[in-house]
Amino acid sequence: MEFFNPALGKNISFVRPAYFIISGLIGIPNIKFYYVFLFFVYIISVLGNTIVMAVIILDHNLRSPKYVAVFNLAFVDLFGNSALVPKLLDIFLFDHRYIPYNDCLTFLFFCYTCLSMQSFNLVALSYDRLIAITFPLHYQVMVTHRFMFCMIASFWLFIVLAVLIAVGLLTRLSFCDSVIINSYFCDHGQIYRLACNDHFPNYAISCLYPVLIFWLPLVFILLSYLYVCCSLAKVATVQQGLKAFKTCIGHLLLVAIYFIPLLITFTLMEKINPNARIINLSLTSVFPPMLNPIIYVLQTQEIKESVKSARNKSVFL
Image 1: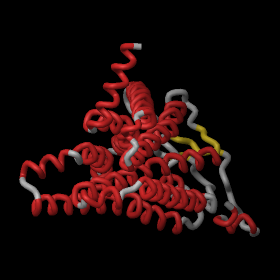
Image 2 (image 1 turned 180 degrees about the vertical axis):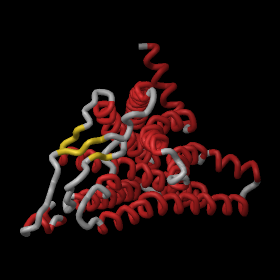
Image 3 (image 1 turned 45 degrees about the horizontal axis):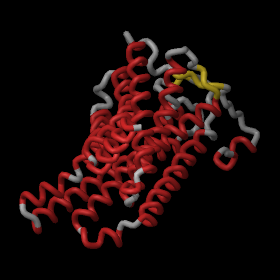
Image 4 (image 1 turned 90 degrees about the vertical axis):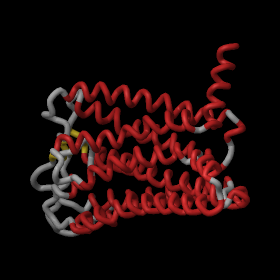
């Protein structure tokens, strides 16, 4: 990280703390009930996403390009919640609020990477629905396994590089006063605001990051569905349009669960009580990974039939 930290090679006073203190959920009334709730959310998330991944791997009927993106979403949800929730419970439930400097940056990297990949995975699924409905005759040519693998791999590469730059820029900051992070994890915005030297590059990337990771994917998804609706209105009967649009319900639910709470939080940021904001943001981090597999099992006919088939086989064994 020395590339990001020119102060390390010069005779400049530079203070790197031994640890940060995570204090976001401290002092909230009856907060232990929230920790119990998070524990059950995590267990359901692990079970649900593991089942979806196992079904896709074992069922040869679920080998279409779409399920490459579904599998990746389940993996990201499982990995993201496993990176966040156990550490969050360890910090607050067992009062291990002192987190070493390098561990904090590592914690930040994995949390931001997984949360960001959820957004881009919804873009991949949105593109799949767009082509399947508007260009059904060309779907097999336009959405291949190779194309889907390349698209998801490019998303991973972009997000990992973006988060590495954000983390690398934090290493050039000097912390000579407070090391208390008022959040439920090692939040980039909360960390750079504690610095006592110039943090403009960190501020710039904190402004750019939501645009690239949040707003651009959301705009693409909304425009894709606008195009789908326009296409269905021109060429299909009402019954055909509803039947085609029904295949999008699961994806639309995922989009709503992921984006709407973030939109509410960002819109009402200044009006929300700080404790309520922290709890709301933590819920938006852990809730979608729990609900995504449930929605896909209930809304996707292929997965539903595969789960029923696997259950019936287990009954006769």
